[in-house]
Amino acid sequence: MKLFTNRVTMRGTPVELMGFHSDMQQFVSETIGREVAVWQASLGAPTGTVMYTLPVAGLAELGEFTATLGANPEYSAKVAPWLDRQVAPAETSLATMLVGELGEERPPVGACAVVTSVLIANGAYEGAIGWGAEMAEYASGVGGVPIMFTMDGFGAFGRVNWVSVAPDAATADAALDALTADAGYVERLGQTTDLFIPGSGERILGTRFA
Image 1: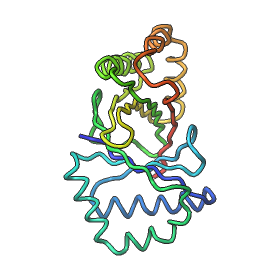
Image 2: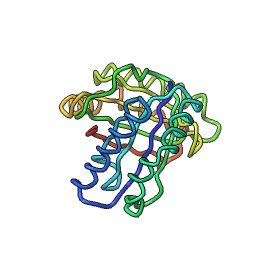
Image 3: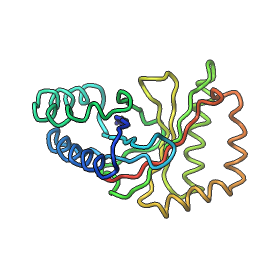
Image 4: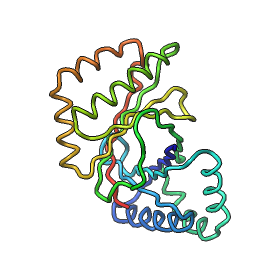
């Protein structure tokens, strides 16, 4: 199973944008017969950024969903009036699970996802993937929230991600506080000097609203 993400940033009031994205989430989910989740980037990304996420088996299934939407004139009619609101073209990614599973149930509305991404340094793939997998398992135990370790198949080459999804903000708070206070976690962060490209890391907090 892979995770498809469509990230887009738009101008507009929160009420306008949330209304549009909620409507699109319902329409797309019903059209393709698979629940899509929409996350507002609360921290770590430009205001107005949202992420649509959808688990897929692979490129073939993603292509089927894309073709179904592209052939539906109502989809184009819904999107067209909002294209000039986009700050930049949407960014899409397809990530492979290296550690963890997506599961059958989608996270509930109100769930908080913390996504930490970084680029692997040239020649450091074996060490970086091994460290990343071990870190995901270790941090899951410390914070009490399962963490998936994924690698993007397209876009920036060598981008890996740690994704933790908590059912609510309080649980996410507790997990982050536990990690920050854990000496083993801090020690492991110090082992990454030659594994990743300096300055390439980012962390985003997303809250599911549709």
